[in-house]
Length: 20
Image (cartoon, rainbow, N blue to C red; front, side):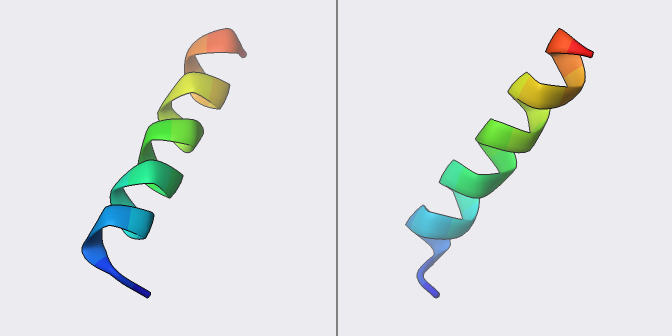
């Protein structure tokens, strides 16, 4: 897994937490 993919996953998690 590249750091770019990791950053994208973390970004999605942040959005999910913000929505919740």
